[in-house]
Length: 385
Image (cartoon, rainbow, N blue to C red; front, side, top):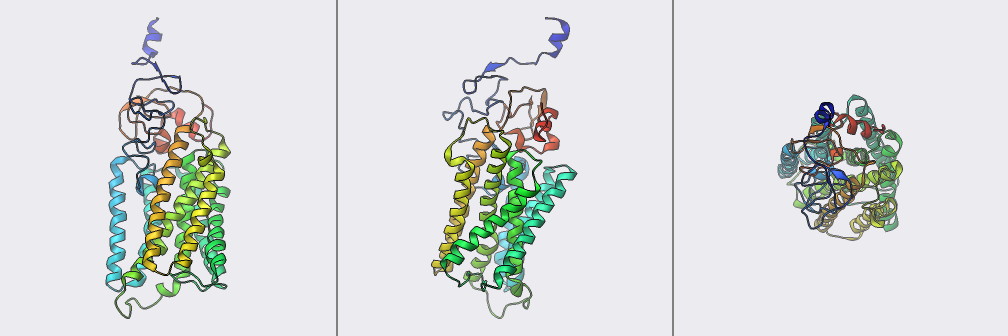
């Protein structure tokens, strides 16, 4: 070996991955397919979520699911802020400040999401315009949906009175379609699965806040203090209409949008392909979830039971998002590639630039694009290696 070749040789020996068969650097995970070498599940690695490998795939978590680019060291700040926001909603209700409680509940997740995008700088300056346009289109559709159907149905926090086919089927299906319009129209140049999730979540949160503020404008413009104490049911209704609905909408819209991204860009290596994880099954699941909740809201008389059902649905759908994204991230990629050493945004170790960190197993596409190695950043924008 010449001195030049010796200088260019990597400071490690490559070994064959038993799952994908490629030569990869040493580590706990395969940098090419993401499989965990010592986990009995191997390629499935259910104990190590691809976007947050310190968590189980089946864990119910808002932040690491809807904010996948957020590093582990910052996640607790967003969890605490989200919890504090929920507490503020309850306290405002207890103080009979019904309108502020509703406003805080409606804005909590959208504001938190925008802070997340700013904090991690997921995109550079130009894509911010597309992201804001998607969010703005979601708000516009939410306002239009509320005003349009407001002429037909008398909207309250308890639903409408037009019949189960209208309330439980038509309204949820129309709302779901409108939430998908923005991501599908405005984001054609971005190629990664998490791009689809980001645009879908932004559209859904914008739609929900537009719907809530417009639909309950009479409440927001009422006298600041209520005439009497706010009941537990009224506080629960605020949480259901603004926060739980936002989580459900973000989960269904984000997952359908991410699945559409994966199917459209054909970046899947088909190692984790399953009929239940494909775009048709994901879209059908989203519609069934929305219609099921719409029918439950119409037929169930107890508001507290409705809130519980929405809470359970939100938790299940968040897990469903994680399962879909986990397998999509493990499938995402193209040709085998081992790049130069670079710092992992999750564990901060100096590792070869590959689709997965060999040390902690995080999908490198879960890192902000500006913080990735050059080769992986180019592929994130659809450029050849």
